[in-house]
Structures are given as C-alpha cells and as structure tokens.
Image (cartoon, rainbow, N blue to C red; front, side, top):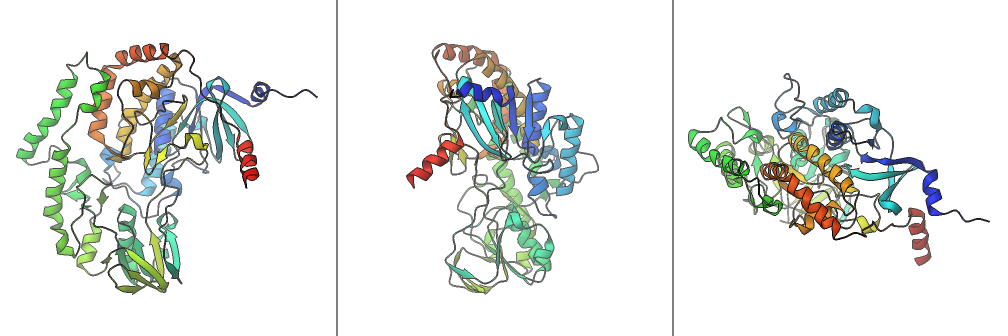
Length: 491
C-alpha cells in the first residue's frame, strides 16, 4: 500500500493558496476587506454568524447606542447618513454596516455560517484552515478580525445564589430587568447602561464596582465629548490645541526620518486629559458628591466609561453604588464593606477574554488583554498570520480602520516581496512589543503619517533584513487530530 504524502493531501484541499482569508465580518473585518479589495489583493471572508455586523449583530442589547460619536466612529470614506443622531443606535449601526458592504460590493466574498475550527502553518509558508463542517482550505495568509466581545469573562464567586446570574452579553432586552432586584457587577459602559435601565424599570438597581471610574458625560455644551478638543473649545484651549500641529508640521519635513523614530512623535494627550477633566468637573462635580471614592487611575489609563445616566440616578436614589462582592448567600449578596442586599438577578458586566480558540498553542500570543505582536499585527517568527482589531481604541473604530487598513494592504504587498515575516522587520528596526491594549488615536495617526512618508525606506530595510535570513521558513505545526490524540495518550 502506497502511503499518501503530505503534499498530495494538500493538493486535494480547496485550492485558495493565492489569496488571504479574513476571519470575521464585523466592523473591523468589513473595513479590512474593503481595503484589500481596493488594493486588488485576493481574499475570502468568513463569519460564524448568519449575517454580517459582528457584535452589532449578535452581541449587543436592543437599547445600545455607541459611546463614541458618529463623526469619529464612521469610516471616513463612507459617512453615516445625515439623519443619524450623534450617538447611533444598534439598529443604526447594523444598517450602516450593511450599507457599507453593499456600497463596496463586499458580499460576494463573504461566506456566512462558517466557523473556523483550526488554523495552522503548513509547508511552503502556507496556512491550512479547517472549518467546523470538516472542510479544509489552504491560504497564503489569515487576517484575524474575530473581535474581542464574545469570550465571556465571569468572576469567581464564593457561595451560592438562588437567583439568576447572566453575563452582560446575555442581556438583550429591558424585559429581562423589569420588576426585578438587579445587581450589576462592573464599571464599564455596558455595566452602566444596564444599571441605568434597571433604575428605570427594575425594583432595585445596585452597581458593584471594585474601584471607582471616571464618568465622562456623552455631551458637553451640546457637543459629543468624543469630538473634543475641537473648534468649539474656549479660545485659550484652541490656542493650546494648536500644539497638536507641531507633530504634523514636523512630519512634512522628515523625508529622511528613520522608521525607528516614529513612536517618538506624540500628540499632546495631556491636553485631551485636561479638557475632559474640566468637562467632568463642570458636568458632575466630584466623586464625593455621589458617595464614591476618587478613581486611583488617571483618565485614559483605562478604557473610559462614557455615561451621563449613572450619576443622575445615583442622585435620585434609583441606583445604589456598592463595592466589590464578597460572597453569595441564597438570595442575598454580601459586599466587602459588610453590607448585604437581596437580589433576583445578577448581571456580570465583567468584560471578555481576548481569544483565538482556533490557533494552536504555539501561536497563542495573548498575555492578559495584550497580543504580543509587532506594529499591532505581525509576528516575528511566522509570516502570513495577522492579528487585527484586538486593541481598545480611545475614539471611534471607523476612523482608525479607515486609516490603518490601506497601510496594512501595503504591508501585505511588501510581505509578498520578502521571505522573512514583517514582524521580524519591525523588530529589527526598533519596534517594541505592546505593553497595553489601550491605543491613543492621535498617536496612531501620527505613526501612520510618518510610516507613509518613510515607506520607501521601510521597503529598502525590509529587503536588507530579508537578505540576512535567506533560509527562513514557517515551522509547520501538526494537525488538530494529532494534538488531540497526543493529549489522550498523556491522560
């Protein structure tokens, strides 16, 4: 009996080795796909859901609205309709993403109800993608845009609760709260939205926070706070804001700038922090005014909580603030300050894990909320695998993806010219691995501007580094079946 070779098995798979696979058809996945199509880079796109839209389709509650403004959330090359409010609803967002897909003819490349079960590198620097239905394909590369609002993070509780415990992702409609004594655990945007909804229609609304957060109002003087600083600022702040032009002016005169100097250009985040601190003080006053302790972190050091309703309902007694949960006891919950309250429902708005469940252990590069890759997307030891959209952006995702996706397309074309991974190129020219998942949009925009100006130098350097590693090749990894068999033998 003739043993079948690995190469002959690969030939029997669906031949898509001339293109990339985009995983996910949410906000980020659609934006990246649009850029690939505009750059004439062949690709397929899959999504596990039965429709496009990502978290805006399958993940959010009916009453959700964006916290960033329409102006900075929209793709800059595809503005939202003029009749949209400053803070579009979940339905607005679904309609917008569907209109975006239609406008740029993206549907022809999208396959729905396709769950990716395993992705691994194989010989010839290609990638084998296995689907839940058993189909396998070979791709040149895999662009992972599977999002970070789906792998639910639950706290570990001591004791038992007689009522219902759900994650905020399982909350879909206000009727789930109606007439109930509700405890919401968390201090982020979903937690505050749900606590405010429970304050309106529930019998009780309690918000449990391990530590205080900065509550940023959605608007100030009729303008979305996300749009500040801007031309609506007082004159003295407008003059300070002119400092932002320094980086831009400098970038126009750095034809010889080194790529390694890119991260050194910073927009004045202190100005944004100063402005928002002033807005918070003028709008809400101090935390002590609401019976809360002052946050231990500076503004923007954690993902912001943009909510005007929680302070309002705290003042009206419709929301009660409590510290962290100590233990569960039947229908009651004991908090770390010794107080106890009875509840019917606990909503854990405790966030999500950053997860790529279809990757083998060797490619699991997530540490906490951070993906350890260079220039936000690239590995230094494997080419063809790209981590996209894992960070938390201070601002709107659409404007960032509209700026980044075309540059990423240029990166892919450069990757075709060289044999080594682009991550290795970025590493050797001085880029560092990220230490936080929080991204300042103005810093990112400045980096992209300078990278665009110095792209020819990046290409030259990439070819020089490539010449130093003539024998580079991805290390193939075993199929999932082999790993599972090995695990069974170990047990």
